[in-house]
Image (cartoon, rainbow over all chains, first blue to last red; front, side):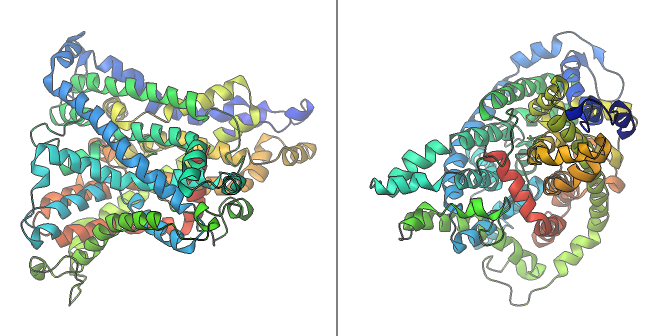
Length: 302
Length: 309
């Protein structure tokens, strides 16, 4: 790639353009991303119109998968569960990470030490976390179960769903805490000093300064959370396997189950299309509302 | 999001310790004494909340460690919160003997390949996005931004098709390629941010010197964006190390098994031997913990930058 680039940038070209890279510098990454991320987005639409068992070649069947999708009660339930999971996760994770983040942004030494512990879950893989919790919650052999009678939380529909909410919150709150901590560190101290002179209470300062100043961080974190819940699939697979029954079968799990356990790739693709639509909408909203698109330094204003 | 989708999920991090040189240059972070301290009375309510969260995070992790040090025969009768009277590493030995090291080796190969690919692809692209500023490069930047939110789950069926067509199914390369691709958006975002901090004067000095884009890239951009590059490297490494879905659907044989999938398989095998299973969980996290300890500061700085806009 660099060979082509040199050729395209003659050393003695117009003053300020000297040393500026040509468009070719973007091609390797773009091609790579195109083949493994953008092309699949298109392919998933095509595959949703085919029947394919994962072995031979996909054969075109028209809208059959879509008709089935619309009438599939498991899909309807999965959509409801996904929306519920997203909403509940947001309601649980946002306040906790916001408060923890603002708290951790303080300069005190004990806060720094405690925060270091808070962040440990981020280092564990989703698989490790799900296995850990499944072992902890195991009614017979788990550490809690050995203490005495312990309810089989993963065996009940509602409790299994709530366990998913809890375990994913346990896993992802550290990330969002970090985002809020970074955001809170950027709030100018002068605002708090002014509020103090005005006699504002601690709660008043939080409500009238911290929260409004964090609104961009709240947007960013919320977008990440919403998109993140689409990926809670791994936790579901390991903790509950979509069960009991279909009580925790969220949309991504349904996709996996029909595709890689039932080998109905066409139907799985139709399910996946709904994820693509949601994800695209969310990412467009993100570019629109979060300022990710603005061409400026991340350090600005820090 | 394991594109970003991957991003939201697991990346290590940790608060910048104010006493350590702050990631983004000490002065800015110093300017922010917390609201609590400015009033000179401790915020008891917040302290209590933080302590509660410490229990939520700490107790399970503590129980995890205690259980792995417990002799299997004592495990059932022991109190999960009391450290074992005779701690043992037997469970770790059992986990290693079940083939864990082979999985770790595979994961290491995949991780190194993913990091190399991601760093090579994103430094060049970010350089062009930041410096060329043509309609084309702005467009490329937008493509990656949109890509931030593509969840792996949405495209795993076509990725499977592409990998099968390329003849890569059930190989380590099958995991490397899509894992790297899905790490690109976040990494481009982080690197463009850090490359924008290179001042125009430096570029002009290079230009006066008659440097072409390749020389500018090698002599100025790469050295100056080292913090961004290490953030990207750590991020990509964590993505690769902790990835689950691609190994699950793109490989099959034990010889190509990665660590996360190995844990998942162990869960079936070790149904009753919970200490052994948990020891495998701990071992799986050790390498990433080491990377994190080495590169903590740059990772935290990069991720905070993403949220702090």
